[in-house]
Image (cartoon, rainbow, N blue to C red; front, side, top):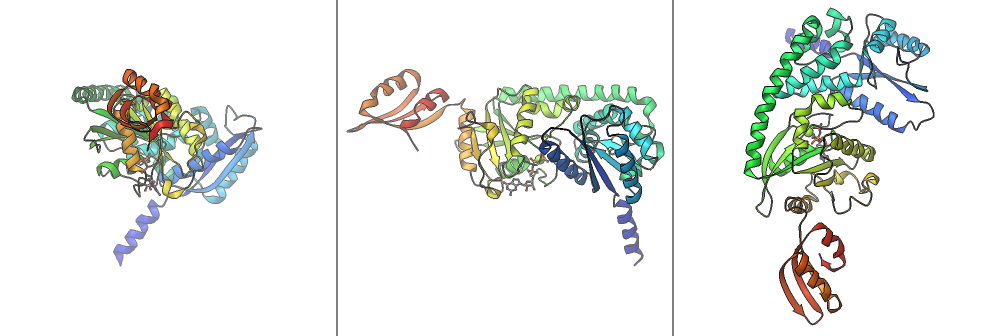
Length: 431
Ligand SMILES: Nc1nc2c(ncn2[C@@H]2O[C@H](COP(=O)(O)OP(=O)(O)OP(=O)(O)O)[C@@H](O)[C@H]2O)c(=O)[nH]1
Ligand SMILES: [Mg+2]
């Protein structure tokens, strides 16, 4: 009996109070992306273990430099926090330390204000499992969150259940501000050592000559589920944002017998500040240094188009835009939609619809990966009518002709062609 009371008390303590989410929608602009971002902020909060008490939107020309929202809205927010016993406010944009301080001063000492990036870092802190991951999170928190945790001292961990302050560097964030610089330097040194080790490992892999494929994409697209489905890697797959922080690499043997290395990577998200991308360089460099990329998209998500745009922009920023890429439209078991306007016509031939859960489309994906590994070469069977014998001559010139069988109607040809010829010969290709 006593024990169950004890458990209840614990549960009560663990239950985090609701938070207010705040966003500024620019006047005269399409609110849709801002609405989507705010909905995503709610999911981020849930992933961090919190729940939403209310959402507050201000339509405004631009956010206030000093306080993010206007003075009228601050009053509204203050009374909302008071009525609801709310102790955490999360703003859906990167706030300056001064904006946070001013908002907190206006809202009273019981309310802590954090921004989208601090919340993301909090989730990273919860999910980091390797030494490398933990060091990167702590460093990013010290650089980003610490200057924003203004004067909240001892109450920090109580307010809002500690969301925004958790992580490997939790105690340091609260008490060690004086030693911030030294700690940052120490972490940078440790990361440097780890980075050198990784480089050695990578050189070994390069020597082995195995083709490296990175599985990249928006958070929650199904990257880990795909890696698990193919290799049984046992990576955590979960319906929450940033379930994966640390990359996992597995060997995989394609049906042809070709071996590849498949790496599951951290998910991308919109509005990720540039310096945060830099802070997670070592996690993201798996994508920058691979030989080919599978961009996984949750095709059942109404936001899939925007999510793909964020992903390709980030790939560009990481210098990986020109690598051979396949677009994997995942979760096809949940939707009939196969259209991603962002991919346009260029993407044709590089798109595969699959379900990592049911396995639908996976054999075709494997074929496409084979093609990617063999450098965009396609093994095709062509049926050439007598009128197209010139094509055979071109094949002898520009491709590898493996077999020719002459028939009364022309010739059946098996050849290995590159992307360019493949496009030109589509009319003759037999499925
Ligand atoms: N219906 C359906 N659900 C899927 C499919 N693939 C993944 N999911 C679900 O989508 C959720 C996210 O999957 P994950 O594999 O964790 O996604 P992720 O891309 O690794 O996400 P992060 O690591 O958080 O960036 C999980 O609940 C999966 O079960 C699919 O093909 N169909
Ligand atoms: Mg994952």
